[in-house]
Image (cartoon, rainbow, N blue to C red; front, top):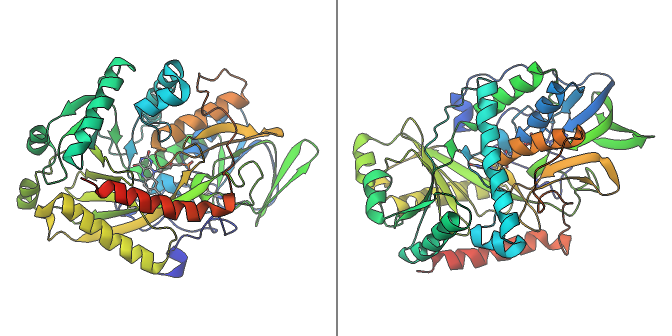
Length: 452
Ligand SMILES: Cc1cc2nc3c(=O)[nH]c(=O)nc-3n(C[C@H](O)[C@H](O)[C@H](O)COP(=O)(O)OP(=O)(O)OC[C@H]3O[C@@H](n4cnc5c(N)ncnc54)[C@H](O)[C@@H]3O)c2cc1C
């Protein structure tokens, strides 16, 4: 593993690099060449809105703003989709933040919890609409999501959640027994029944990024790659963003850098974000005998009931994609350890895959906030600086939707009822202890997760 392929800690570093190619992932191997962009910024530019970061958030904001007639310039340090948007697991689910159905009601009351979930469903509608509008071929399958009980004891919690989803949210989540799981989806000692959500899409995230780049440019947005924002000052009411190749002057700035946000980028995000590594392995294709023996038939996107959960799916070519968190910093040793660990955990779930091998592995920074919710808002002392950040590792659908919400906010259109997210990013208490607290939480969760 070369040093340059490793990810610098955004809490320490000055930014995600400059002009780096897409990570060597499975998605990169199967998605073909990226579409053209506008190259590195060379010289100075004047625009209405500058967007920092060309992932789903930035490209969706750029697309919706440009479609509405605004002049938009996107500045991306590496290439469009280089961050999480081009390297995630491809689970598009109706989720906003990390809280389950009971917690949402206890935090905000039933009415608000319901409206947050309604926006989460609308976000999935935005994914479908963008795929349609852009004719984006991203191998989307619409089979749903399974949350699998990794211990028999976890079925009780899933049954309680199923009742809440049905009775309080009016949503048809339903329970599957261990037998139903084994015959239709997945067998093995950690498949003890599941909660099924009918609305979820499995897709190729890099192809979706490529499609969003085409859509944004097609609507008139300019997307500069290899253009990291390295300086930011105000000149009267205008923002001046400095990159190595020139400056962009803009009335509004959208921060769309999520887990790759450097601490010093802007005070509105400083001490408010915790980037957390998530790793993925992709195996060689299962043989028909292995697939049968593991009962790994499911086309659904799957997570389990752990706090430090595993997310996995059978890919169209019968490979298994398996992801999880656990490492704190990205080093050659931690990469190798996590690759071996994820393979061991996959085989624990599917002992019939004892001889499976790993052909791809990679990592990225997901973005955690102090209240475990994303925030779509603006700097408290300057409403011309907007951001959408903190998807808690579940941003495929909400990042695309949040980009649209930012565009609506700039255009002065009304926003939906989403009180917990349409607020300023909260500061972490004792922000210098963020990595320490993360280590402690991981240890505690691992202990809880392994209980019977
Ligand atoms: C391994 C992994 C698996 C995941 N799996 C899932 C999943 O299955 N489902 C799900 O819903 N979510 C998943 N996520 C999370 C999801 O991918 C993200 O929430 C989402 O892609 C965030 O999109 P974004 O546009 O906000 O940020 P990103 O796509 O991360 O884009 C941010 C961009 O900002 C750029 N940038 C940063 N600083 C600067 C600067 N100073 N100047 C210019 N550019 C800059 C970066 O280069 C980067 O390209 C996963 C994440 C990881 C890492």
